[in-house]
Amino acid sequence: QLQLQESGPGLVKASETLSLTCTVSGGSISSSIYYWGWIRQSPGKGLEWIGSIFHSGTTYYNPSLKSRVTISVDTSKNQFSLNLTSVTAADTAMYYCARPYNSGWYPFEFWGQGALVTVSS
Amino acid sequence: EIVLTQSPGTLSLSPGERAALSCRASQSVRNNYLAWYQQKPGQSPRLLMYGASNRATGIPDRFSGSGSGTDFTLTISRLEPEDFAVYYCQQYGSSLTFGGGTKVEIK
Image (tube, rainbow over all chains, first blue to last red; front, side, top):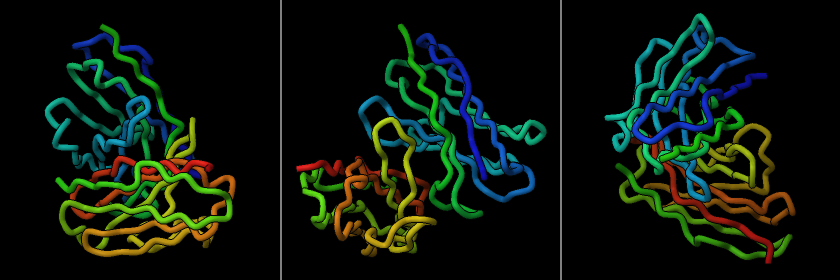
């Protein structure tokens, strides 16, 4: 069964860089042709797609975050990562990594449990 | 960017009743690439529907989706106690965006 697990600091200072890693188990990132994604949810708010990455490294970002986001993949570790620069309080959120139900650009069926990141001033 | 507007914001219903949730897109969703998710407090979202009307793996048949173009509906034929949650629509026909959600609460 595919499992995803987010990890990283739970507290980040304003203006610094938020970095999270998603570790995939039960399946190989490099042998599959899925777009792996990051989604966030501010406290009490809705879902916001941050971006997605293909195992080859091709990325797609939310235009509203594109200038601050980098998503990368490390197939040797079966992980993909999120970097979000110049964070503010508005970036405080639960961050999820996820994988679609099928290869290609599809909705997310498999989700991590989420990592809560708080931005402090 | 396609903006998705969900209505109502909150739906107050009793177990056994039928729920109809609306998702309206600011422009036509290519190939009706519209999905629905359910999220319960403290849990990750759960994929319910894709392609507007296809149930995801393991989703009970009391959930159904319909619509095309800019207007989509998620229907829960008879609410079970475990169905009270927040529901989000998502379009994946042009980039990827989520609606603001509809909360289905117990009346």
